[in-house]
Image (cartoon, rainbow, N blue to C red; front, side):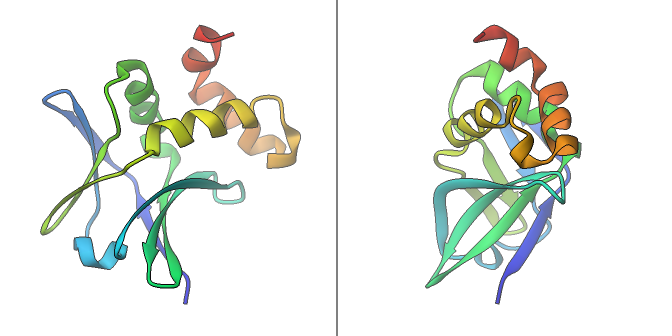
Length: 130
């Protein structure tokens, strides 16, 4: 059964980007996969957690894209997901995010609305490396 979780808030704490999840670490699955995909219909980036033979889907909605842009600009590693019972580092998050942003830029295959939203939200990142 596919389980999807939504991340709609986060903050910068002592130089580390921390996203908030209203649940326990166990609810996310066994371990972070280091993989990220997109859900262009939901306008979100999706980080995958391994959960046995399946994945749990952690959707990063537009509400946190500005913080994700800040994470890239800071260039100091991967963020944390803070849960009710602790936190987990999202290994590979930043690298996967950057790869997707550059793949989405100008690529209508992701859908025009998603492509334009990503280009606008991550404009600074896209301009700095152009």
